[in-house]
Length: 505
Image 1: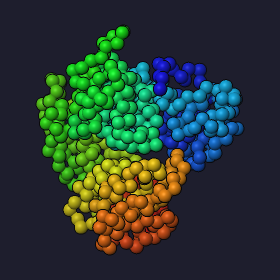
Image 2 (image 1 turned 180 degrees about the horizontal axis):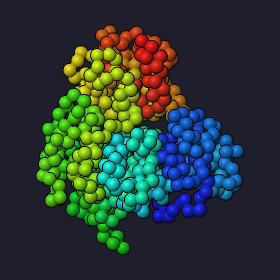
Image 3 (image 1 turned 90 degrees about the vertical axis):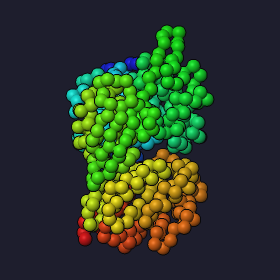
Image 4 (image 1 turned 120 degrees about the vertical axis):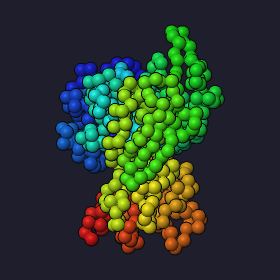
């Protein structure tokens, strides 16, 4: 993807966004509205995101149609999920209106700033959010684009800052992150995902390597020392674009200049520059320390008593990546520690929606996890915090997201779910995809049944959400913890269960 350092919003008075209800597109819409630009947008259906944008002043069309693209529109912005045969894309072409992908627009907004780009298969949204809060609390006044709705951004997913720092979630889907030119790149971890885009892990690695190659002079890379796939980008020449190695102490030369890439690592490994130690789960709090193995004399050799109120060991990694990125951006250690201790998480990332973490009654979490690794991390977090000292069961209601992901990972999904006391499976949420013959949640159920699930640890698959909720209401008992999980519309099912089955009791 070619990326030009120009301001695509120069002279723009009115913009139309196709797919405005997506979290990434809504962040662009928020930014445009805050900039004083008139915003219209369309999506297939509406929801809480489009409702929020309406309140902010956007005009929302619930269907995508040519008449939505009026002649007074200066620019049309569209998400990666929008195809070129979309009726609004075709109408924009007919009227000779400039068309820009969301990723290119994002790059146009942030590339001129000191850019922190947060990447990786898992943890991007949380890590970006933590960094954003740290920078805001420290008075850096950053520009922010994140793939989630944040309370400290008044429920939005973007922020216009007057400072020279920007932090963005760098999405690998459709290789959108190629439009970014970062000063700091965080790589949380790498796994195969988005199998409608990437055929195998090697393609994922190649995409991340190319993304890093677009970085600015003196790029800093913050990498997970405990993730073999991430570290292979820094050591395995087979996965590196020729002439653009990212080995430590290496540099690449171009005809114009020599660019040096500095790598800092985080993790439990004793070789990590920011080494995680002494993790303790204490009630609703997580405590740990970071050993600083860098040569940065402005940072203590040991940062003790780092406190988090977000659950799970995976969030210790997210917090440590954020710590390393913010140290690189010049933020003081104590400011970072304070912000970390106050970060309450974000919506749909293992969000407690009903009950108390250690309550005697039923507790309900709403969780965005939709990859086998994410599902396992959420389960471990709940076991560590919510039911560690009780006899309560963990019940997961899982909605697979996309047919291609279900087909690729149904065995892995079963493995990640098998530790639950009870599992409920819904129909696959198709998102952008057409149905694939023979692919359904039954593939996961069959695999689960083959893993010695018993009558005391049952698994169910329901085509009907109403039937699922009725059965769930029958099997829950006092002290249970329920996780509604998936990247689709299962959050609505979670709300319905709470309102129709729990609040009335």
